[in-house]
Image (tube, rainbow, N blue to C red):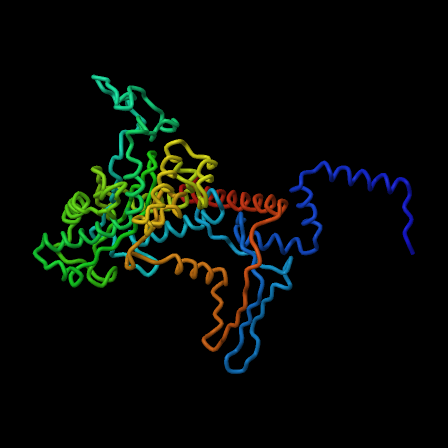
Amino acid sequence: MTPEYTPADRRAALDRAARLRQLTEADRDAIRLAQDPKFPRWLEQITATGGCSHPIHLSGSTTTLDASTGEIIRHYDTRDEPGERLLVRCRNRRVTVCPACSRLHAGDTYHLVRAGLLGGKNVPGTIRNRPRLFITLTAPSFGPVHRAGDRCRPRRDGGTCEHGRPLGCGAIHASDAPVVGQPLCPDCYDYTSHVLWHAHASKLWDRFVIDVRRRLASSVGLVQSRFALHARLSFARVAEYQKRAAVHVHAVVRLDGPTGPDDEPPAWGTPDLLIDAVRASARRVLVHTPYSLAVGELALRWGAQVDARPLHANGDGPDDDAVAAYVAKYVTKGASETGAGTDHPLTTRDDIESVPVNAHVRTLMRTCWRLGKLPEYEPLHLRTWTHTLGYRGHILTKSRAYSTTYAALRADRAAHRANGEQLGEGTVTEATWRYIGSGYTPGAAQLAAGIAEDLAQNREFAREAKHEQWWGE
């Protein structure tokens, strides 16, 4: 029987439709989701991802069987989930892309670096008494740029460059002033060397590490090829863009015995010896670029500023936790935060003109694109790395024996979430998964952002409560 609607019912329905039309697309979509019977389970999935901003959608199943009897111990299938899909983290490290996943990545980085400084995560605590340094290596100068702090670049004699621009600057710039890091004369600035230095920075670091080992061996009378029989150099390094959009490197360097963290270094291994080797190698190593008719052959080196400070177990010097936290914080920064490049690749030259960067960075991008067409630079893939200004290395790299790995930390976290449940050795797991999409609808994105904010606030409240409990406030 067809229900009868009164004029009042029709007016009410029209009023509701009119109110819905006044809402934004995101609000209408959020209302649609909230009316779904499986909405509570959807919220559970989003909470499990930590409020990930761009989750991966998977479809499939996992079945755990008893290997001897074939009995099904556990079965999971996404057909029972909202939309017949499971949401998992995107795991993007950049806070500009996904704050939730970047926070998780920062935590993993902190523990990875800290374990190599103080022990833990299967690394013995005795390493805190080893020779350990926190070093900074910078890029060389490619031309004078504006600086923050005191008077920028004072010159008594004034003068101008060949392009008619002042050679100095007597202004006092704030640290966040847009002019900081910009060349005094863009036409004098060596953009070609800047880009090619970025493209070879990882190779320069590799040469540096090799030379430090050689210098340590030579300083104690060892044959260089036999250094590995006496000691091992372990490190974790992070690349950071300066205001002038040039990469410099922060690294934790540690001297171990020949087998790594479980082995004590030789008696001759001292922080002073390690500092001398680091400083000498930073001045000495260089990388030659391929010869080009347009550019020639460049000899690329580290900059003149080299900082090497010992890390002491008694707290005298840079704090281990502070070093680990600094590295972890920088690893999650996106290109838009540092003002150097973008977080996504650029596929055409027109893309360069549309990205929201300053004139200095845009010129570096154009230089990448121009040099990328030269056959002698083809192995550098400069056009592929235009968005990072030619830099091709990872933000964080470490030697194998430095500490734990991201994969091990993720496995530990997964085991913890499973409450330590052990299925035993006599089990077999069969899994079938496929990628079916990513991201959110507008309403889902709005709800997920709220969940991420609530989780962040809960962590902050828990941190404050722990602090009050500790100090008795």
